[in-house]
Length: 268
Length: 213
Image (cartoon, rainbow over all chains, first blue to last red; front, side, top):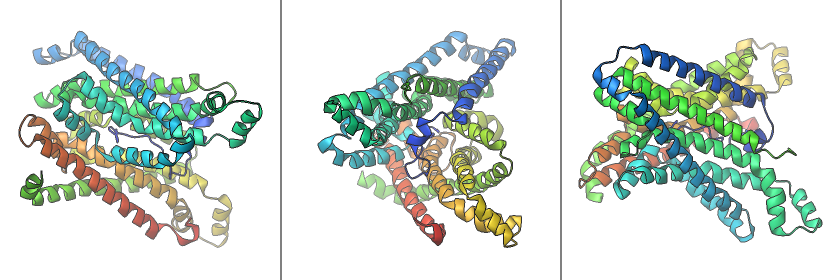
């Protein structure tokens, strides 16, 4: 959220006793369940929502706020906010993480992760509002806030994933005459991909949840329906906004899981 | 900035305490609920995937959305904030408690029974102390997560420092907007850091000597 959260946050802490690299490298029963249950749940709840929307007696304010066109464009904004931020996170955090496992930068890794950890303790709303006061509102301000907020899981998992690669495999690569760059791209990165992708999924969830706060700074997203509902105190708008935010988050989490499976190298 | 804090010092300190208090109470309730549920899951292993799925799905739902779902039931105010924070706080503890109980060596349970311990004392004197380090890690995660969720819950007038962030937002362009937002954000970070240190201390005190790393 948790938004948030740290919304909400399915982040496995390093001292959590469940090592992230192990949980990411094998396909568990939980992963199978999480691939099947959320889409079914989302479809069922969305179906119920459509039925309610078509049959409910709405007054003019509600009908205005819940036009299908409005819902569609807000949802699209939400998706854009999430995907653009996630793309930026991957483009920044993966190369940075790789760099921090190389030679002379290695010593800096704990420092960078420490800073990122401390940043994660800052509440997402605070970060968004501060950036808004500094840069003014709009789509790109929200993107900056969301990208900053989503960077830690990918960064940490990239470092942990690459450090977790068996050094004898790298050694073997060097023995075959591979250069440093070749061992990196042909051995270390492919073996670390499941762990990195688990981080990407965590980031996606974090970003999708925090994107529901983008409405506070005029950057749109589904939070707008909920925000309007709270300020007009209309239950129908509140519940619609909340349900749509939750469904989209579940769908994006599911997308992350599918991506995780799809990018898994064949050997593992 | 310092003038701003100086003028409102008492109020800021009060709100910081309120923030810590909300998180503390919510996490306390969450710990009790999560451990009780985990005991149940440990008893009936079929529940295990269900608990994991609920925990994973719950953590995916953004806290702002839960606030919206709770409002029609609990109205604007501290109750909504409390339920919201407690809900999210339960999930990491539940997940860790299930793992923690599952990791307890069955032979130890056997020997405890062999010594004539009742089910209840096996739970309280063997299972719980052995699973506690893992549960404690979950509680620590929960505390950190709850700090940010409590900030979002301030949107519906929950107690704590989050209110300052929204004051800053609504006064955007005004002289004190940045001060308000900074006090709220940095204040929460400070409260979170202190809480984490206290949690570490709690771990020192409560993790049984025999299994301390």
